[in-house]
Length: 258
Image 1 (cartoon, rainbow, N blue to C red):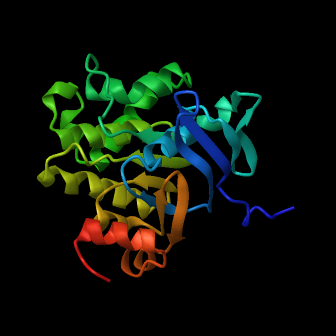
Image 2: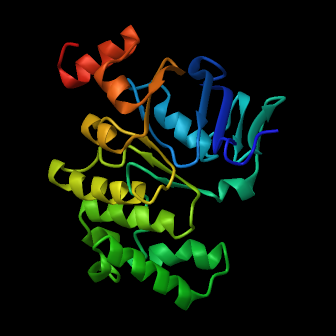
């Protein structure tokens, strides 16, 4: 029996996921362990299973085979063609997507308090107070009554992050959250995530921004072909990769030779 200090926060074992009745295999026996406080950045070629991995971890995609535990407790498993998900565990995980997914007919404060009030039954005034504190922290207090259409892309993404944090997640997932933004807006979103990292909030981040990966990750995982090819500290994986496949990818992204 492992002690609490050695229990992985997340343990993924033998994950398989395919589309089109098995025609397109996206995850092929993927194994990842994540410790409490880990900031894992997942990199790799398009179609390598990165976003699917996050959606599986969030409980948004079924798996064909394998299991995931969270905090030492069973979370997701596949058996007899069915995926079993513990919805109580799923509520401990927050996710921010590439395209904001804010409700356009609600103002910013309304977007933030909706889930705490409706899902958790939180007092509306208390939820508003917490929401305003988050918006102030992210430099968005003046936008509390604005609607998503009145915000820049960077502001929308910061609101989306604040909304996810309203449910006090034990793990945050970020899926290419800056890839739809104009270059000058990328930094403001990355600064918010770096701020969360300083508070030891565990996170899994899929990104193509190697500068960001190097600056935020405690670990970098290179995925290709639905499996983990390389896993290690950012300086090692991004600076001196051991695997030829990783090296080729890094050279293409950075346009450098090792």
